[in-house]
Image (tube, rainbow, N blue to C red):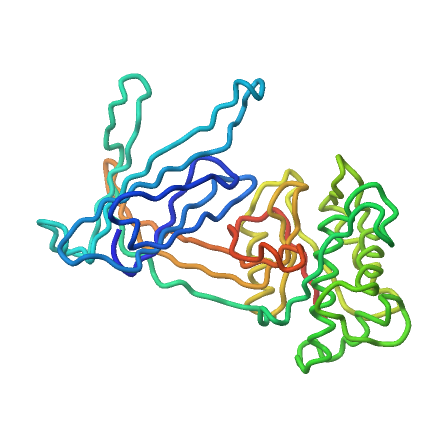
Length: 348
């Protein structure tokens, strides 16, 4: 791993494992885990410094929560150790003279613990990240779900992330109309006084009585139901949020999804295009009936990979991420995997 480079390592399972970095190289890196719900999480390591001419050992000890345990007593955490070397530059490697790096994927046969090089890939360096934003962090509406029995929530569960995500998006667009965004200039009235259908008002940045009223109305429009204390919303009902526009605005809403909760490139591109082409956030899905956050940032980078098996060919690999407003009152906002099974957008 070379100074100034960022590396994404695919872990074994989804979720948020515990990671411990040891070795001399640990003092020269920054790292984070990009946790996901349905695909293996990513360990992202950035090498901020190194010692010229010296290889610094680094080990990532990853501990996963116990899975598939028959009982709590039999539950055992699973671990893996990933070893690296931190270097100043490719020329720090004895005998290495080019900028190419050679990676030999390891296959463990499980019986004798013998490793073999299955495929040889010569990987170029990752490109710089390309960033795109729909507005600023400060423009986000930091709303959250309403607890069961907390007015106007009359249900026995949380109000649900679906209604909250749409409320944050509608509030964002309303605020943009009020602050001079030409694309949204004609859409005053998306939010009105006390969240009703009266006089125009500007959607507040945080929760108040009016936002709670708006969120509860949208929650009912999208058919959120109760399940084990949570408020899930099916993707095929999410377009019901357009009912909120009646009597308020001419805004248009569209949704796209995979009915099995499988991430698709086309769905990522709907949300990506909303951010890049229309500078407007989009609702995405980060877990099957688990969570709908609001994506307002997008980033990608690429590299060319040379692969050989009988003959050789080049492939382009991509890393992609969305920056999301989680709908937790501002808590937990950050980068997540760009894999999504749902995309919901609005247009003036």
